[in-house]
Image: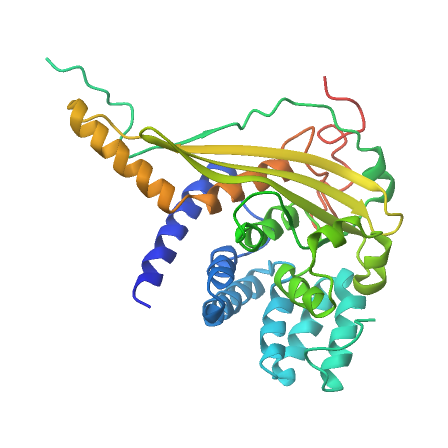
Length: 125
Length: 226
C-alpha cells in the first residue's frame, strides 16, 4: 500500500519526461490512463486505481471536448463487472455518441446489460 | 588536475535504436479502405516475460488513437474475448479478421507481436530491449493494410565522479537496479509512438484528425520513400 504511490510517482515522472520529448499537444485527454492500467494489469486488486484514473481523465476530457476513445467504455465495463448496470449504461451511450464507430459493439453490450446477463454469455452477437 | 566529465547531470536516458532504416511503405491498401476504427486484440508474445502482453496493452491505445482513429477499449475487449474463449493470441492472430467484424463491427484490427522484451546484464551495465511487430488487417477483407516494426534499447548512464572505483560501484548499482526493475513502460510507450507517427512508415491520419485526414499523402503516401 505504501509503496504504490511512490511507484506511481516514478512512472508518472518518467512518463512526463518521455512525453515532453515527443509530443506537442494531444488530440485527446488521457490523464493517467496508461499508468493506471499498467498498475491494474500488474496487480488485479488495484481496480480502484484504474477506475479513479478513468473518472478523472473523462472529467477533464468532457470539459475540454477531448474525451479519449475507449475510456468511457472502460469505466462502464468496470461498473458492469461490479454488477452496476445503471451506472454503466449511460457511459456506454456517451461513448457511442462521441464515437459512432463503437455503436454496433456497445449496443450489444448495453442490450445484454439491460437483460441482466452482465458478465458472461455464449456469444457477443 | 582531474579530467572531468560534465556530460551528464543526472543518469541520462540514452535511447538508441530510434533510427530504424527507413524502408518504404506501400500505403495503397490502407488508402483504399481508410479505416476509421482499430480493434486491439491479445498480443502475441515471443519474449520470455509472461507479463509483457498485459503491460504492453496499457501503452497501445493512446498512440494509435492520437493518430485519429477510434481505438476500441483495449482492456474491456481483452476481458470480453477471454469470456468468449478468444484470448489465445496464437488463435486470434491466425483467425480470419472478418470474423472479428461480426462481433465488434471494427474496420481494422491491430495485431502486435512482442519480439523482444528483456534486460541483459553485461559486466557492469544493463541494457533493456523491446522489439515489436505491428500489423493492421482489414476487418472487411482480411487483407493486410499496414505493417511496421520498432526496436528500442535503454542503458542507464552514470555521471563520472572522477573516482574510477566509485564510478564502477555506482555503475554496478545502477545496472543492478535496471536489471531488477527494467524501464519497460517508457520504452514501450516511445516505441509505439514511433511506430505510429514516423513519417514514411507510420500510420496515415485517421478521421479524428480532420485537418490531416486524407490530406497527408506527402507524409504517408503511396509514393515510395527514397
